[in-house]
Length: 262
Length: 262
Image (tube, rainbow over all chains, first blue to last red; front, side, top):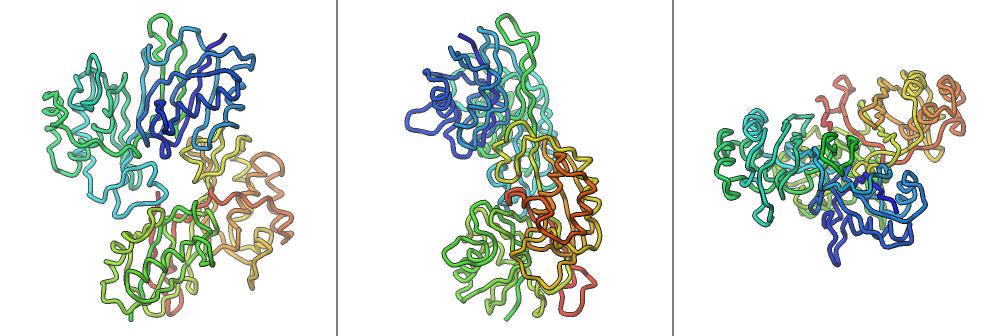
């Protein structure tokens, strides 16, 4: 028996998210199906980030146990032959038997992309949220500054989620503009359900002048989801980087994770 | 009667190219259908670049004549409501009655994108040609240098085409690498059928070491399609810029064209 870690990239457009659901196409479901067929045993992967329907990833992490004698590094090649073209394994390797991607400290980086132009651009429609309303990126940056650091992000969490604590740390939250695309890049210790999309929706409100940037501080303090902006559409969101904390406590994988970025 | 010029962006993935064909989905066909329905008269557009099946554009040009009283600038908004989401008008404006996009001097810029990584990336699969074979961009640049300037590009032209002259001018041909993507950017006075894709296919041969960069000069001199590399796949190609020459002779549009880029 060995434990294998996969780095998984996908275009989330056609999927009902990562998490296995009956009668719905999911990334986890496709991985289980392809791995079970390849290895000839029932495989169930455990994912690091349970991304929502329509959200993309360059480097989500999945682990599974297998009795197979196929070397772990070869599994990526064989698995890609069996997966649909919108899911591609970026690497596979053997990992510690007690490595669990959700039980160890990590840093995740997401990008939220907004195409801010007069008209939509077809080649970006699946990977960027479009708005023709001019956004002031200076105001978005001012709003973003209030969110950096350790805070209770209850206002930026979908009420559907049931978590013990809504305290999280944002290490980095940048707003930059590349041609007509505004890119929010956020790195954190972990994210609450819909947190990045609610942050994006709130900073868009600041960018278009519907709220003052200082309002973002008051939204944070209110700890009330109704105070924040709308949940921005899924298509704009991509998980771009995953790092495991090398000083994480026992049982955790000691290497840094994949840093695929494009 | 007025003549209207459209700047048209599209994701070519689902289309059998620009040019109208019976029983096939084409960009021209979709434009004619949507314009005819919007304006209540039979409209036939004339395109600047008849891009191939699967090729994308940020700014192709179409012109048509109409009796409609709708102001030309408003047509873009109304037309976008009737077009599929993989075609989007970027602007519409009235133009000279004798402006014809293929009869006046212009500069077109195409990008050919190659994802050069160990494994394909799903979010780039529709817009980039993937190869895992490592490409040496210095060698690609050395090969590209032989193609700059005015030459007879008969070796870089699909034999299916019937044109009077195969002499064209390449003003610019750059090879750059952005993360794992190699981008060939070529600006010219006009291109022969499949010319950019054959240039890309040939420079890929140089990049992987199957031919020496100096061989590109001999291919050019041979004026024989069989000497050049394969036609690289359509999905990597995007028309990114269109400029009309301000010194073009009579009857031609005097402004510079659209420069949408992303």
